[in-house]
Image 1: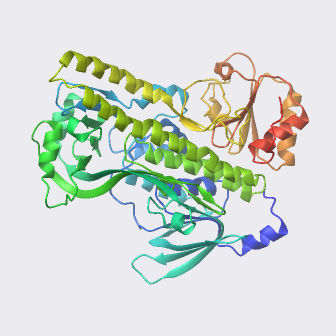
Image 2: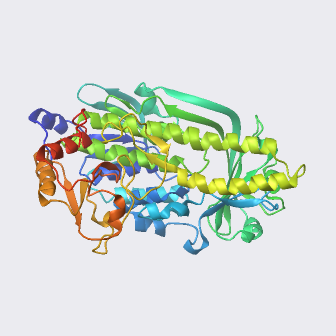
Image 3: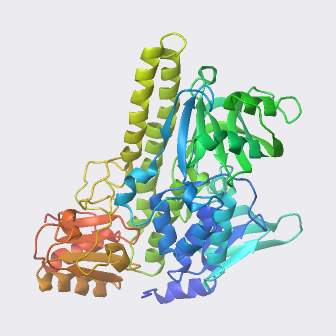
Amino acid sequence: MNTMSNKDQAMAEQQDAEVVIVGGGPVGMGLAIELGQRGVRTIVVERYQQPQPIPKGQNLTQRTMEHFHFWGAEKELRAARTIPVEYGIGGLTAHGTLLGPHSYDWLQRDLVKPYYFTGNERLPQYATEAVLRARVAELPSVQTVYGWEAKAVVQDADGVSVTITERGGSGERVLRSAYAVGSDGARSVVREQAGITQTRTDHDRMMVLLVFRSPGLHQLLERYPGKSYYNVLQPELQGYWKFFGRVDLGNTWFFHAPVPPGTTKDNFDFAAYLHEAVGAQFDVEFEHIGFWDLRFMLADSYRNGRVFVAGDAAHSHPPYGGYGVNSGLEDARNLGWKLAAVLQGWGGERLLDSYDGERRPVFASTMRDFIAKSIDTDREFLDTHDPARDLVAFETAWNARAQGAVGEVHAFEPHYEGSSVVWGCEGRTSSAKGSHRFDARPGHHLAPAVLPSGRNVYEELGPGFSLLAFGVDPQAVQAFLDAAEAKALALTVVQAQGAGEHERYGAQLVLVRPDQFVAWTSSEAGMSAAHAREVLERAAGGLLETVAV
C-alpha cells in the first residue's frame, strides 16, 4: 500500500523513475528485479548492449540462489549453466603443480546446504547476466537503457539528477529520480560524483586473466572428477594463487595468477606459465589476455544522502573464494526492499541507514577474515613447510589445512548482529564470521524447515515481513496483524501446530524480514498490542529505543 503525501505524489509525477540504477551487471539487475517486483518504478543504465564474454563471478552460493528463487529466475539460471549438473562444482587446492602428489578438496560449499533453501550453482557471469536481463524485461515497472553511461550525479533535497551519455554517440539525457544507486564497478562514476570516499589496500601485484581453449587440459584433469576450479600454491608466489576454472566441460578455461610488473600480451610466455602450473604440456589456444591490479577497496560509506553504492562500486577484492558477486547480490537484496519500504511509505529513514550499517561491516569482515587472511595463511604455510625439506612435517600440516578448509566454509555466515533494525543484538557488530545453526537468531539468516503440512517454511514466506507463529495465542497473531495494517506493512503469517522441524527454531514467534533475515524472536506464546507495534516499528526503521520483552 502506498501512503505518499500530496507533495510526494507531485514530485513523483515529475520524476522519470523512483530509482535510477547506474550499472546493469548482476548487482544492478538483481536490484532492479527486487525493486521491480515490488512495483517501484526503476530505470537501469548500462553501458554495454550485451553482457561481456569474460568468465568471472562463477561461483554462486546457496544464499545467492535463494535470491534467484525469490526473483523468479532460479529455474532459468540453473538451465543456463555451462557444465553438466552431474559433473559437480567442487574445487581443489594443490601444492606445486596440479598434477603433483599433494592436493585436497577446497571450498566445499555443499557442506552448508542444509542451512539454505536452495543448492549452490556455477556458471559464467555473462550467463548469469543474460538470465537477469531476461527477468528484468518481464517487469513492467523497470526500464532498461543499454549503451549509455553516467556522466554526472547531482542530488538535492527532493531527488537526484543523473546525466547520462550515449556510449560511442552524441546523445545526452538527464534522468530525475528520488534515489540513485551506483553499481557501476570499482571505478564507479556514481561513487565519485556522490563524494563517497574509499579506503584502498594495494597488494602491489599485477595479475593476468587468461581465457583459453584446451581439450588437452580437460583430459589431464580427468583424474579429479567433479572439480570445476583448481588453486595452485607455490612458494615463490608468497601466498598468491595460480587459479584455474572451467568455463565449460572439456574445452574452455580461465586462469588468474600474478605476473611480473611490466608484463604485456607480447613479452611473456603465457603457455609456458600454464604448463608450469599444471606440471605437464598441453594444447593452448588463447581467447583473451587481460591484466588487473590485485587490491582491496571498501567505500567509507555505502550512502550519501539519496545516493547509494552496491557491488564493486562499494567493495572490490581479488577473486579468491567467490565472494565478490555473491556479496554484491546480497547488497542488492538488502537495499532493494528497504528502498521500496521508504518509497511506499511504511519504512522509516533509519531503514535506509541500516543498509550501510549491515552490509559494510560484513564486507569488511569478508575482506579481513577470509580473503586477506587466506593470503597471509598461505604465505606463512609456504614459508614454514617444504616437502623437499621435511616431508612428514609438510604432510601433517597439509592434512591439517584440508580440515581447516572445511571449517572455513562453516565459519562464513554473514549476519547483522548489532543492526539498528534488529532486536536483541545491542553492543554487537555485523560480521561475515559466524556459525551455521538451525535455531532462529535475530540478525541471522533463517534456516529452512519443513512444516507439519509438508511444505517448507520458505515456500510460505511472503514478499514483505513474515511472522512465524508456532502454537501461540491467536490474540498474539492478531496483535501483529492489526499493527501491520495500521502501518500499511505487508505481513504474511505462517502458523504450525504440533511437532516438526520448525521446533528447531527454538522460538514460538519469529519475525522474518523480506530478505529472509530474522528481525526478532520470542519464546512467549502471548503478545500485547503495544509490543507488537513496537517490534514492527523497529524492524521497519521507526523506533530507536529497545522495549524489553
